[in-house]
Amino acid sequence: MIQIHEFENPFPELIKTIFESKYEFYENLNVLHQILETPLISEEDKVYHKQIHGWQNDRNSIFIKDFHEYVDKHPEFNKTYHKFIKEYIQPLFPQETQLVIQKTPNIRFSFPDAAAIGCDPKDPESIIGLHCDSNFGHNENEMNFVVPITKMFSTNSIFYEPIIDSQIDPTNFENLKLKENQFLQAYFNKLKHCNKINQTGKTRISFDIRIIPYSKYMANLDFFTGTKFELGKYYIVL
Ligand SMILES: [Fe+2]
Image (tube, rainbow, N blue to C red):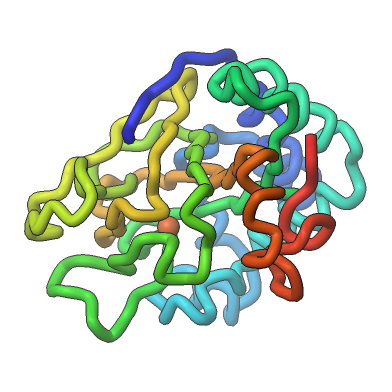
């Protein structure tokens, strides 16, 4: 249910170029929060990035917009993304000739004293955004992959239960540790996971990617038809 795979990570170099070209930021991405102290970022965006949001508006970050603009303008991103899927993800599904993949990865930023995901009023104390992806309408055949852009550790990372319905208190969940040359495969559709306030002093950036085996997608077409999860909207076939 949880596996860590080794790979050659091509993404940090690409993501760096976004911040070099727009903000002339040449430092390690794990100190990206330093640009929040410069006039390059509007007051409104500074305030946004220094607090926790409800999950309904946890995607309003200027940096998430920057990423999507970059993907739209630079075809090399999708080329690299698809190569990564073919080289490292496809072999994990030996029965499948094709995969249904998230069209564009979700990029996550966990800045110091904030968190990468939004909170829920029902969150236990010191826990942010406790959920499993099926709570948000994701299909149970979906598998999650987390690819680090910067090192993931301690409170800048994800906390998860190791088995479904474990009844483990979220404050005792496992902590995901990923070096830049490792990615995670996890069944977050049913395994609960969450964030905490990032107290590491380091920014974490990562991708979430959701994948469904093509045969499972086709066998469950009714589930997807007429939803945002239709092929061409949220997913593409590779
Ligand atoms: Fe999730």
